[in-house]
Length: 265
Picture 1 (tube, one colour):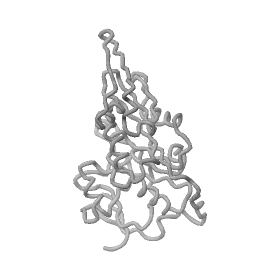
Picture 2 (spheres, rainbow, N blue to C red; picture 1 turned 135 degrees about the horizontal axis):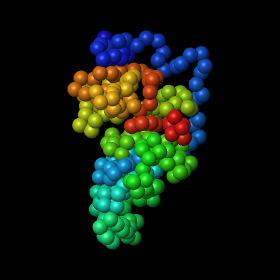
Picture 3 (cartoon, rainbow, N blue to C red; picture 1 turned 45 degrees about the vertical axis):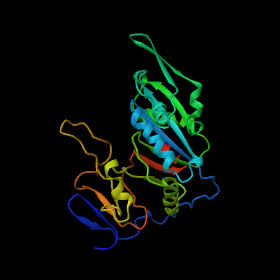
Picture 4 (tube, rainbow, N blue to C red; picture 1 turned 180 degrees about the horizontal axis):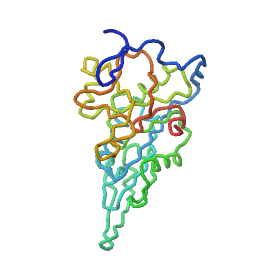
């Protein structure tokens, strides 16, 4: 069947009408006087190794890395591998030194070699001890303290892999909404499925997740606060959409907006 449709867990259902608009009120057209900079918000809780690789992926795959600023909240223990430490080591720069003062105390020192780490001046860091952490919502809110005057904001998880020219793609997709207040959101694909979505000939190249309901385990613990749509057989997805589809929920794993609107959402 041709045309846009969604998968409701049992079957594909055609989408009729203009799914990109909400009614008679026209959206505010995007303002086109910005500089195109993107503030990437990351909250990492004792996830330094994967977070460091995320930083590397951000800059290596951006079409214009000079216009990317990272706001990093790192909540780690002294003995952990820090996100920035992993990122710099992946770029062959080691600048952290640890000195054990006593069994319950480790002193961490950053040497002047840090300046040799690529794009270190484009990473704004706010560190906290892990024992002072108050959860992901609090950590993500802290990025507002290091948010500058960047035109766009992107919130991601600390374990995210980026596709080529992701910055240009994100801005173009946002502009297509025709709405200055639009917030793009989805559950990113698993890393082992990335090629299936990047390639135009991939099995999922025209498909995106569609979030509807939370998934809760038998123990009554929610896996996430949004639908877990990635499995061997997708339980909820949309494909062949000509414009942005309005979801019922936002995914904290990926939020993209103009200015701070995504953070406020």
